[in-house]
Length: 119
Image (cartoon, rainbow, N blue to C red; front, side, top):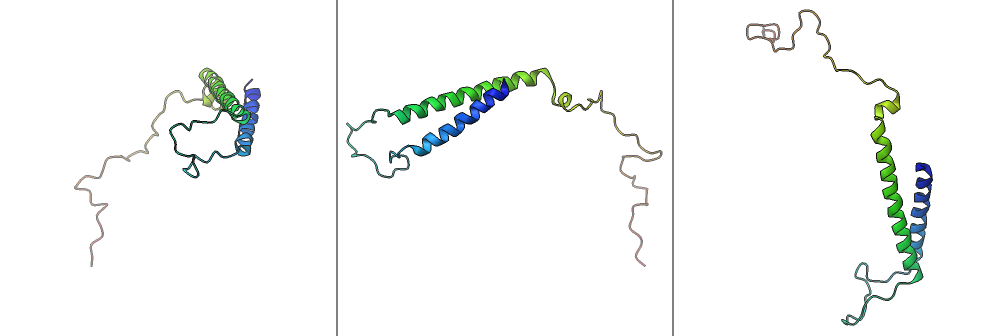
């Protein structure tokens, strides 16, 4: 099911790109060109290309939401680690220290880390 929706989603994306690139520029996007500036000037009626663009955009958003819902349903059932096949650790354990070693800093009386005397 997810593969079918994904293929439809990709086809819609390519179609939407193609329809947008074929359309004629209206000239108002970046402030270039423009109308006569009169308050009576409204938007022109939607053309067939504009209606097709809206339909493709709505279908693209619908498939995006559908893919999101499908992915959320699949991820709720299993963990990523379960899908990889690696066993999950029961409880993390600290590594054992060798005998006599400590993670504490050396005491003040310990001179083993002092620099050698300058002769």
